[in-house]
Length: 354
Image (cartoon, rainbow, N blue to C red):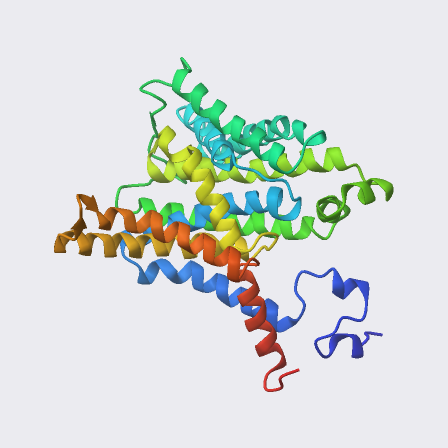
C-alpha cells in the first residue's frame, strides 16, 4: 500500500524521497512549465535577442562543467575556456567530414581526455598550487593554438554551414536553430549530472571536497574522484565549445583565452558555487548585465563623456564586472542560487511564515 503520509507536507520521510530529483509534484510541474516557456521563447524574440539567448545557453553549459570541478569537487580551475577551446578546435577540424551531431560529442570526449591529464596534478597538489597548474594549462593551450601547423591564420578556422534532416541552415534561421540544439543539449546534460549526484560517484565528489582524508577512510578514492571531476567538467566545456564554434561560424583563439576563463569563474561565483541552478543564473545575469552596460557605454560615448583623455564609457564594463564580483563575494557568497532558495521556501510555506 502506498504510504500517503510520506507524500504529504514539505518533509521527507524515507530515503527514496531524499534521493528523488523532484521534491514535490508542484516542483515537477513548475519545471515542465519553465522548460516549455524556454522552447516558446524564440517566438517573442528578435534575431539580435536570439544571439544573446544562444550565448547564455552555451555559457551555462560551460559554467555547469566548471561547477562540477570547482563547485562540487572543490578543485580550483582557471582553465575552463581552454577545455572549451579544445572541444571547439576538435569540432572545427572534424566538421568538413562529419555531421555536427558527431563532431560536438567527439570534441567533448577529447576535452575530457585533456581534463583527465590536467587533473593528474590534483593527486599531489591542491588550492592555490592547483589553480596555478590549471592556469599553466590555459597558457600552454594558447601557445599550442598559436604555433600549431594544423591551425592556420593564427588559430582561426571557419565553420561550414550545417545540414540537418536535409535542411540547410541559412543565415536567417542560424541563431534559432542553434538555440534549440544548445537548449536540448543543456537540458540533457543537466539532468544527467543531476542524476549523477544521486549516485555514489556524485556523493564522492562532495565528500572529497569536504574532507578528502575522511573520504579515503570511508573507502572512496580521492585521486580517481578528482580526475573524474576534471574529465567530466572538461567534457561539458568541450561540448559547449563545439556548440559555440558552430554558433559563431568560426573558431578564433580570442574566444578561449584567459579572460574568458575568468569570466566563467565569475559566472559560477555570482550564480552560486556547488549549485545546479546557479550554473544558469550566473551566465544569464552577467551576460545581460554586460549587454546593458554596453548600451549605457554607447550612450555615454554619444554624450562625449571623458576625463583627462580617459574614455569613461569604455571603462564602465570592466569596472561594473569587477564591482559585481566583489559585492557578491562580500554580501552574498552563495550567489543568486541562495536567493532562489529563499524565494522557493517562502512560497512553499505560504501563507505561513514557518
